[in-house]
Image (tube, rainbow, N blue to C red):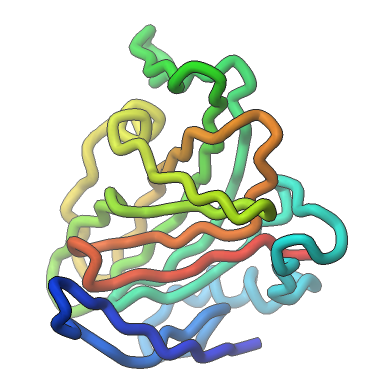
Length: 193
């Protein structure tokens, strides 16, 4: 399934970039064949419910969501909610969510489809819930959850990283917008059914 959304990035009243944003799995030359097979075999289509409509999404509804963002192919491999509000790196280092918040941790697989080495750094990402609230990615918690800084990836290389959103325990996220390269490139990943 392929959807096209026209998107524009505006700063200080000037349009920096405008064009189509393609969502969902797409076949292009040189893409990771195993990823495309796995996405094509997934029986669920993109069906993120609109805020206030239908069943509220669960974190697991994001698994398998895919999108492209510039030279990146993104794929959600896992989502978890840290109910205790703490993200750790497995070696004792941890970050605590703000008071009254929990962490929603999205594990993303990112494939560099470009022709040059790139660093995947989703620092400006946001999440939206069914109540119309927006939550910003916590870069520090993302670094701790990932366990290492973002590597420089050669063309065709794949990395896995975490994007982490502090949100109230009752938040039902239905989409995340992953922003890369200082806001010039972004992709929307929606909860699926």
